[in-house]
Image 1 (tube, rainbow, N blue to C red):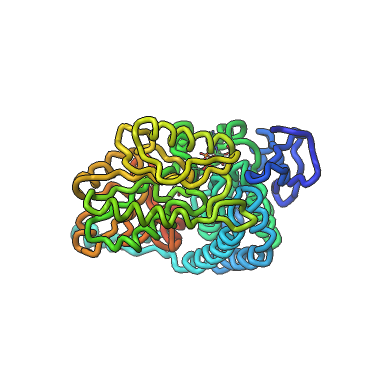
Image 2: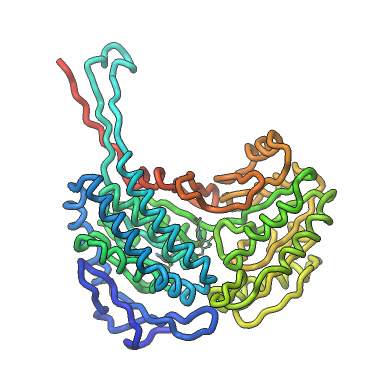
Amino acid sequence: METQLIANTYQFLLNGEWRESASCKTIENLSPSDRKPVGAIQAMTEREANLAVIGAKAAQKDWANFSFSERAELLYAWADQLLEMKEELAETIMKEVGKGYSSAEKEVVRTADFIKYTAEEGKRIHGELINGGSFNAGSANKLAMVQREPLGVVLAISPFNYPVNLSASKIAPALIAGNAVVFKPATQGAISGTLMIKALDKAGLPSGLVNLVTGKGSEVGDYLTTHPSIDLINFTGGTETGEYISKKASMIPVILELGGKDPALVLNDADLEKAAKDIVAGGFSYSGQRCTAIKRVLVTDEVAEALVAKLKTEIEALKVGMPEDDAAVTPLINEKAADFVQHLVDDAVGKGATPLTAIKREGNLVFPVLLDNVTTDMAIAWEEPFGPVLPIIRVENIEEAVTIANESKYGLQASVFTKNTEEAIRISNKLEVGSVQINGKTERGPDHFPFIGVKGSGLGVQGIRKSIESVTREKVTVLNMS
Ligand code: NAP
């Protein structure tokens, strides 16, 4: 809904100034839980988006001349400011994206930790010297100095579900490596993103080094992703949007963190008690609105009955309600998201799946659903619901589980539950995903681990060191000795 300026309207940061858009249009964000207004953000014009990119390009030139230690100082100060604003930020995340308060607070603390670690890791990034003589004797007089230099202007586009963490995880590595950033937050999440940038501004952000562009991706997105002064697009969001952006961006390099359909494979010898707890925590925290949520369970017939009973007990114990009550399962981000989950559940039940929990919905609040006897002809076996529903696919043996796991268009993570570690590693080697968790739920982090999506789940590697490397290019200077 677009409105004229209203109270609680947030400005954007452009070249060191907090401003309102010349469009005189704002976008009002309603809370997913009570549909009350949280505030409004500016719908920026293409002209303003252009100024944001041009301003960032100019600011980057000076910033690249700062030492790593000086850049690190800005990041430390940013982390401190975020912690000072912890309550305000957590409250805003809670209201704007409907996340339970303690999870919202954890997101802020994790982000501050991420930024501090990035500052430290940035200081340890260094180049290498290569002796030409290791190729052949004729090149022995050559010495290559390989250094890392920043790419220039990074366009950071973030999703709604971790509006602070998944934004800072793009901005901090870009800054420590000497880049400037144009930050386009998800519209639902942009108020949290704006507060995060306010913290960075308070920390002493040089003018123009990070410019904030607010407005709908469908309106301002194409302009940004094809802008000739953008040197890298770092995007997290849905697979469809990511594929669209990467086609549109043509020669501009992209890093994509996209959707997932993470399976949990449960073997006959698994500790079922632990598996059930981890699967439910992995599947239902923040109502399943996580790229790395467990989105299907592949379990052998032999232990399916016992596992399903334990899953049901765990799911029935989940707190369902409002984010203010710190519930685990809260209203989904919008009506459309809840409709989609309901459609997947209806399709599955219509085709013979067995619901083991009550199918219930109040507005955007979808109560957690455990669906047994899901088969591969059902949409829920393949689609990412991004909601609180867990399909159980019973399989004859683990080979069948691996086959079904790999038939997915996604390849983010997988969990394998077994007491046989060698067998777990054998299975891990066969799974077409970026990471495999042995006896643990699928999850991003700790944030210095490499984080990878294959197939439809992404392009490029994240994780603090990898993220810093990915926003630099190698530069080779060759010394030819006489
Ligand atoms: P989304 O709808 O794809 O939006 C993501 C971002 O893209 C938003 O900032 C959106 O802006 C912007 N956007 C939309 N159209 C655009 C365009 N044409 N050009 C440029 N930007 C455009 O995703 P979401 O609903 O926010 O997030 C949920 C998805 O993200 C899920 O699929 C989830 O699996 C994935 N995700 C992946 C990871 C990972 O690490 N792999 C992590 C978290 C989430 P507007 O909001 O203004 O439309």
